[in-house]
Amino acid sequence: MLKKTVAILIGSVFIALGINLFVIPNHLLDGGIIGIGLIAKYALGLKPGLTIIILSLPIYLFAWKYVRSYFYNGIHGLLISSFFIDLFHPLSHVASYPILISSLSGGILIGIGISFLLATKSSAGGTDLLALMVSKKTQINVGVLIFIIDIVVIFLGWLLIPNAHVIYSGIMIIVVGLTTSVITSISD
Image (cartoon, rainbow, N blue to C red; front, side, top):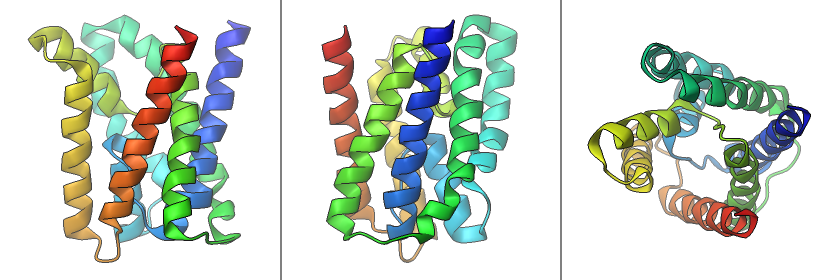
């Protein structure tokens, strides 16, 4: 239990640092619920961590009712990573790095964070959980479902946020995926 708690804390800190040091200052977008939280921040000035929790609630309630193990495994990562995303928000005003450096660095930090959460069978948001549940029912690969959700979120962000950097956001999402893939394959 202590090992899982430490891994969730470390992973959540990496995600929060990536988002606040590199993503927010450059108006980059991520996929999934984190991406929707960022869209809410850019468009409406809402706190992304709190938005992530609120938007994930229906998915977690569904998981509570139908797949309790998914609920129990995911809720800790969701709450802790969302808390750190909002707690570390003042870092987003510290410096602004060049956008390519930010998309690469943010992608690496977020990918490391997600890897820590995945190692504990946890996640930072509800779309991963949703993809797991849909995959279980439909036999569609969970990675394909997450990719589709990410593309939809990026497209939505591109439509709603005039100064969103979609190309660099795409680079960042690729880096997140590669980092996560490499780290999780090493730890298997």
